[in-house]
Length: 574
Image 1 (tube, helix red, strand yellow):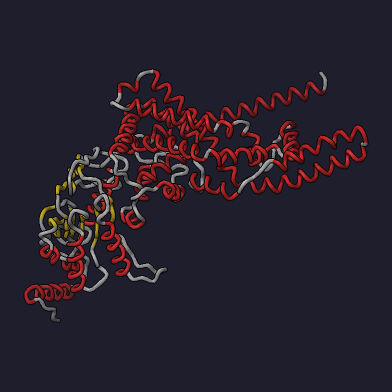
Image 2 (image 1 turned 180 degrees about the horizontal axis):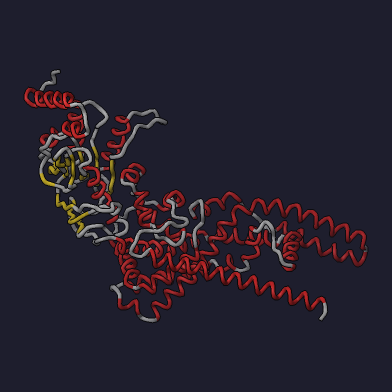
């Protein structure tokens, strides 16, 4: 057996072993994905890659509409935690679309109806849900930044032409021809062109490399979209979709058309793309053919020219890329909604037929492990009193979150929920602005002013205020807050507010319905049932809590005497 034959057998064996190892790794990754996809359904999201809100935050800036949850409301309602609780996304496009949904409540019932139908379909058809989830999982995540940011970064490269690369490659022709006429000059010219090409290659490769992550994700998106379209085609062909809710087949057909169009438009981006993507391997290939191809790329700039051509396609077809990302992301986000619904103890679809106010039965907060359900039905503002830790702030957040989820994912953790379309705003978990040099009071009045300024637009404001003007003295607080809260009523603004100031419940009883939470102190211990009750709070347990916490009895007794004297005379006297 000749040495050449032995070398060939070794090469074939090496290729076989590498391929076998690749198949084993693919099988292992698929098993991990299947375990994740099936294991998360009905439970909370497992720890997984690419599920940090910071990585998708920039995406909504590109698509936010007339109204979106501002930073104050987003932070007040702990929406970052809500996003993580709901984020079962299998790819970056899905995580970004889910974030956009939560950040940008919609005022169109038809959009919510389509999201609801897609989520409902994914809940009913486990096989379809699993197939789509696997295809989306293979697309994966971009990493540190949102995909929209990566697409924007491509603009930093400017216009890149292949003319100079083609011109330098054409110089090889006379150089090779001179080898047969004048070998000395031919070799010198050939060497000169080769050196120039190699030097410029590494310079331009260094400029292009950081942007390959964008190209790599677009390629995975195109391939993933092809698989998603194939799955949708099969689902429509076998007729199973027709047995679902009326209109679901039309929604699937719409997504099929969008995916088919965008995939076709981006075909030139995908063709021979591996030539450019090989630039991302700094070590180059390890086989003899890989090494030969690396030298050809350096000499002829094949990968750089393909990179420039792909960049040109992305720029020309930017709208198709973003439309493809949006379509794939919406399908993934609606699967997230299905997973979220399956994980809840109970949920309802919202009713937007109510003219004003809020009506909810057995409403609860989805982030609480053992939530207490409360109901409310009001067409007036709501003023809530009660001691600290009794449940006031949590109830405000629960109602606000219910309204947000109703207008984003069409899913409310409640037995029923009815309200008109609102722009949800809040002023709750504020703090001093140390960098800006503003006190808590200044931060608070600015936050309240923005709510007042939002009134009078197309849709009314549903606002939530916790301890209005807590940053100032008692007399001015009650005087000013009573007028501000009165201003937060009417046709343009509907307000839920929590306060410790019982005086406000009397001053505003014509504008607000009074509700309260209460606690029980018994045998030196305090307990809360977190149940919402009608009327203003009657108990005065703040001083008694000092005794429960072990304060000196004389301090407690004198505090009680001072309070009783003030209630009797209206004056503070030591």
